[in-house]
Image (cartoon, rainbow, N blue to C red; front, side):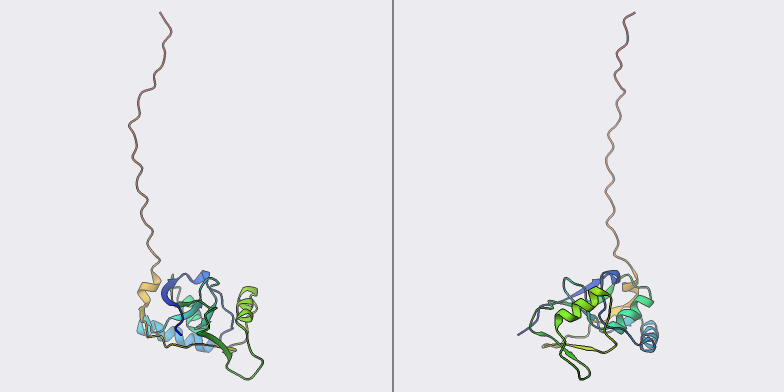
Amino acid sequence: MSPRVRFALLRPERLRVHEEIVPGKVDALVEEIRASGRVLQPILVARGSGVVLDGHHRFEALRRLGVAKVPAWVVAYDDPAVQVDRWQPGPPLSKNEVVERARSGRPFPPKTSRHKLLVSLPERPVGLAELMRSTPRRPVAARRSRPTRPARVALPPE
């Protein structure tokens, strides 16, 4: 069983977190990304909802760096090959709970959910410079202007 996964560069404002972060860990990641000039591993995002499933600290570090795009593996969250568990003992988590926490703006504490794919994803390094640029907009084609004709005015008879 192989989940449907695609790589994409996503706008950060379209993504939703379902877990809080540890600020010190984010600070360290900001420095690491700045020093290396790249992000080695994309975050994991649910298709459609934009919920960040894995990589909350990387996502926050990239936001602090002011990126225009975030590298992401986008998955169909309803695919059985995408699984959710807990890092610590506790009641089972459902995918619906994860999405609801993201939508409600009431994130879980750090390292609550543990998402797993039944396949391994390769490293997909992306340069920080590429993430800082926003997608260039297509130039709007200039409208061809038609030459203006002099208005026909009926003159009164003499």
